[in-house]
Length: 95
View 1 (cartoon, rainbow, N blue to C red):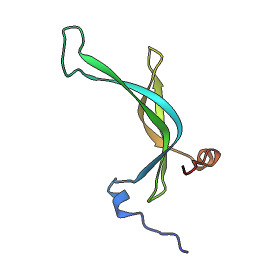
View 2 (view 1 turned 180 degrees about the horizontal axis):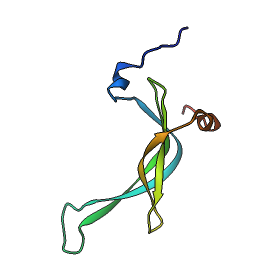
View 3 (view 1 turned 90 degrees about the vertical axis):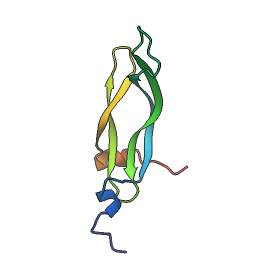
View 4 (view 1 turned 30 degrees about the vertical axis):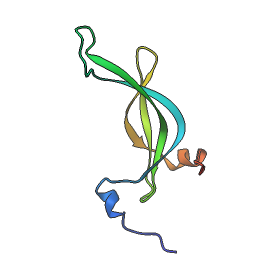
């Protein structure tokens, strides 16, 4: 079987098909409040997310960048490429 030389055209457009894996982490962020009171202008939300992802079409791997908040929670500030050596350490398993 010959490996494809060209990337999938959907991936070139930025429409990757992601599969999440890695550790499960709770992140928090603030959004403007829908119902504004004089004392509360933002609402704090949180969600459980995975730390890494891989595109099933083109194979690129990314990991989340985290920053600690003053109240002890963590927030995601973006994505960075995942090295192959890090990926091999903790390959995800199919459920």
